[in-house]
Image 1 (cartoon, rainbow, N blue to C red):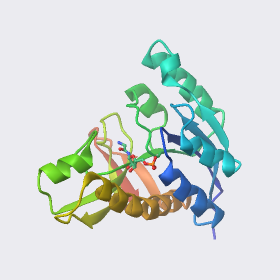
Image 2: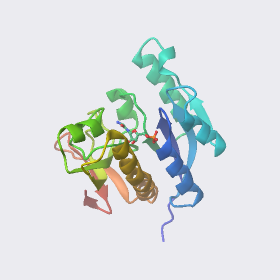
Image 3: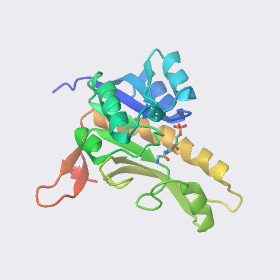
Image 4: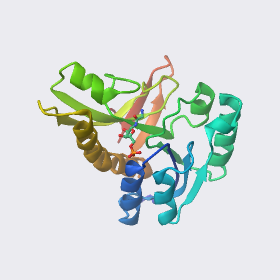
Length: 215
Ligand code: GAR
């Protein structure tokens, strides 16, 4: 049997970090063959950084407001991430749009979770749009990150029913409950090297591949 080495992981956050917590819990239950080496936030004093510290994980802030421009912020961000030599970079509620240069640097090893059934509702306020449009279902998507905002190849999705009484807050809760199960699962596939990113040679189209099959 070919053994797969433990993967180094860096998680990027901007806030509460409930998805980060789900990953920390999954790691301590050995649900994936990886180790979170650092948690990096673009905002100071967020609860996600405290969660990292409580789990004895390096918690670093690269505050985007301290830089004159996006290029300066991203240069420091990349330097900070690369110091941990990650095999996988996980965006978990990281609310900055990344430049195509940065995405290219991590292409195939950077994933994001987005609270909608992509390609529906890219960007912000997904729950509000679901309610305004009277959608009967909603969900969350994990995808590889490419230069197109929320547009990279989808790896997996979870669906929830939207009820008449739902509000933005109840949808957040329903969606996050699904996210906390889904994200560790996807990370486990990646760490087991079952999940890969494939850029086709004839076009710019990228695909997520699981066990040799295009998703
Ligand atoms: C999550 O629901 C995630 O899907 C969303 O932010 C929340 C972060 O919550 N991400 C995006 O909207 C990215 N476009 P958390 O900080 O409690 O994990």
